Length: 193
Ligand code: URA
Image (tube, rainbow, N blue to C red):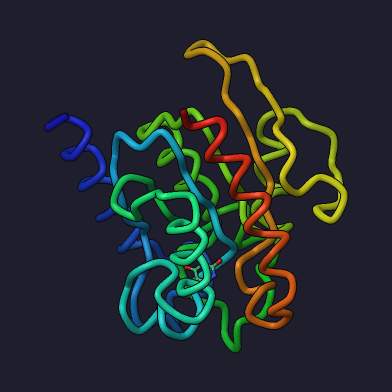
């Protein structure tokens, strides 16, 4: 356990000092991620927004409030999962991540996944889903077609389950869509027994 903490500390420093893409010029804080390093479930968002950039923590704005509600809906505590995003720095005006930014920043995400070694990965939104699908050799799909479905990947550590989910911001802009997210989160609850 101590060893994992030490490794994450070193990785966090590496991420905080990153200047590989231009986002370091406009960021206020790097948002490495937070949660339990032994988490069974890992949530991966797209990129920090305004509030995350100001506080240096993932999902603390409007989308974060929705995520908290969804976690509560399935009796999961934030501190028992690990939450991060594909990009660790906020793109100006919350624009979408650029391919080069994903290329550089996902090296950190890959290291976080190796360290945490979750049993279930939930990419939130199409950017995280596309990255995770490609990483694990799954054919690319539309999130509207596969949200809430379980993809099983055999690994050396057993079966890894991937459950793509709509980004919680989806429910901020379209509140009636929260029901879809709630149903999809119930899939996680069933698997996490
Ligand atoms: N959206 C994300 O994808 N990540 C965050 O940390 C916040 C909002």
